[in-house]
Length: 143
Image 1 (spheres, rainbow, N blue to C red):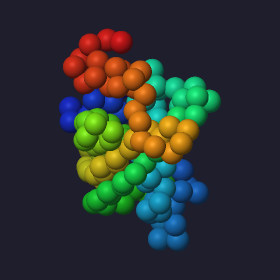
Image 2: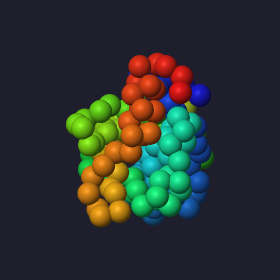
Image 3: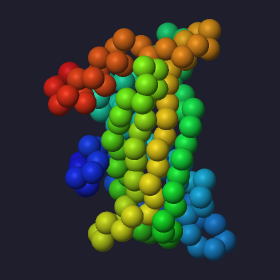
Image 4: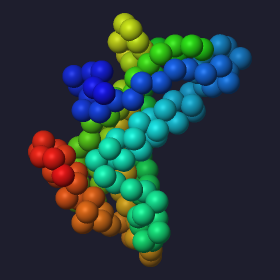
């Protein structure tokens, strides 16, 4: 489901009451859960299986998170989290994400989340399968 031309993948969600703080807006830490959920759904949609990699001793991790908060979300607000991905380096992938309120598409948050994978010794290493999937996805080729 692609709600934004700037995003290659998106997930629609609704703010739940318990995600809000005393001010009646989504707590700033909750936005990271929204972003993580969308990243996981995106990766699952292109065939990246976290559980299978973990069983092989490969852990996919976030190494940097930059979030720019623009507007708050409130209980009951419907929104989407968009995801695009860029190769940052040989070992790092950047997820460019945004949260937009529906139906007006007002920008709520912009984020750049950088991740990698760690092998069983804790060294950065992207699995060949992840590299193949990401390369194919970025070029528009079905995997």
